[in-house]
Image (tube, rainbow, N blue to C red):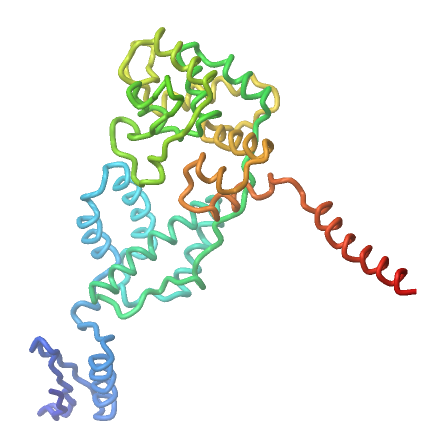
Length: 355
């Protein structure tokens, strides 16, 4: 139901009702303006793109608070990360109505973040969070469409990971405190991530069969995906080294602090930072996570294909493996030259035979 009527003061009142019976009205100085507004609203109702005028006034800050309330059922670390992202989003867009945020605003925001010196990967993550928040606003019927898209998305950045040499890995191992040396073995030869290594329980390692079963991450939270829980085969030599470590530093978890308590990720990272300074050639930014890159290079150098490397690093897709480590596979120039050369040689031989 829609109508336009003239008020005693000479202004034109346009009215319409939503399907739920809620009425909306707006006053205009000219009838033509009232008719245009009414046409826009009724058209959006027909196409399913209608947003209630009252709802459209919801600000980014208000919606972020509501959104976070619904997001709070996730694990604490995930929520904390979202809170950090939302703080930057609210600082940039908080007072603006959701419907007022335009793609140009989003692109200007990401450009400003880069100008502040933030890493490309972090800017990409912030844009992804804004896109998530805006997408949920669309799903909730608060805005008709999201201002975030591929066109507004910044590049994720393409930084090649530093790959330590075998000598550097063993030097780092020897530079660590004795009770933390097993951590280097887990990072470099099983590819466990920081929180996974600190969460690994002795019961999760089958020393006889040579299999590590990642199940939880620090302190004892289940791993997020089925791929992360993929078992990792290890050689008998590594199983023996880990078994000797467990025999000496007895605890429920494989990694412990000096008091026998479960090792915290920040304690391990701090120890790696201290040890890396004693290893020639390791960059200042080398982290525990970079030991996974060593494992990838070791497997690739041994002739492992992308699916094997993907499985050992427990990547969700081969694309992730190729994007990160594609440059480590042997150069195929010689093999492609040989293939083309063989065809040309056969052609030349055929012509000689024909003569």
